[in-house]
Amino acid sequence: MQQHHYLYEDIDITNQTPFFVFYCSDCLRVLRTHLEMVPPAIVSAGFKNQCPTCSAKLESTLACRSMQIPEKWHLPFEHPRKNNVKRQRPMFQSASSLLGFTFNFTPLDKLIGCFELGSLAVFTGRYAGAASELLCLRAQLPIDEGGLDSSVIFIDGGNCSDPYLFSSYAKQYGVQPERSLKNVVTSRAFTVHQLAGLIIRELPKAIDEYGSKLIVISDLLNLFSDPQIHREEAKIIIRKISETLKQLCSRNVITIVTLTTVTPYSPMVTSRADLVLSLTENHSRIHGSLLKHPSRRNASSQFPLHELLRPPRIWRER
Image (tube, rainbow, N blue to C red):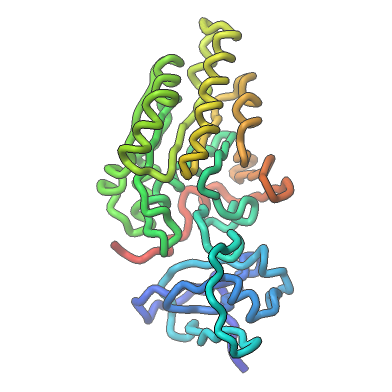
């Protein structure tokens, strides 16, 4: 009888070659390991779309990591043999059949799945910034390792970027922090008019210049909490910014906006978003709530704060 293995096992690495490890995100059972990436739909079909341990539907729980594994984990991969006809690869494939850009952090990936190119996502709550810093690092990874193979444009609207947290993420992924920081093009604004100018006029030109696939605008509404700014003027500026952010979707980039500062203007931004994720703290645990998504129902998840700040290091040394 074949022994089952799980991600939470205390493993002794014997094979230095990274494998793609397919597993059920509900029970963490390892289902298949493979040296090369294969479509998740093939793995799912091999198990008739059901985890043999917890019976979860693999169409929603199948996950993959690139990691070094012990020899005993190497599970021979076989394609399901429905017939012997060699099918031509379809011109288009559904997003669910491919591994896309994710947090690679199960509690959040179960909520939102993959980020789609050409989408606008808004993170709210105290730990929205930490989540965006993690994506800034992951976007730089090669595509075959779950990244975008891209630089990042980061507009700091609240002077809240955290290079120490970013460097910590880089070290956990085996990436040199100094080199990763150079791949983040950062601009700061100190007035609402500077912020509007950066987003409306400069950001489209920067995307063309750097070819970045991920745009992060942190604490977008922080500067609008200034009592000296008239409410109607603030609304006009925010409306123009929101229109520009939505227009960026046509450039095939992922735009992440964080709203950490609580203001009455938040609905003006979230109403334009394709995805809204809330990340709040509750007794040293993070409460993640999916508030808006183009295809998923609202849902929530809780996990310890330290798991977000120190996610498992799974990528190869660089």
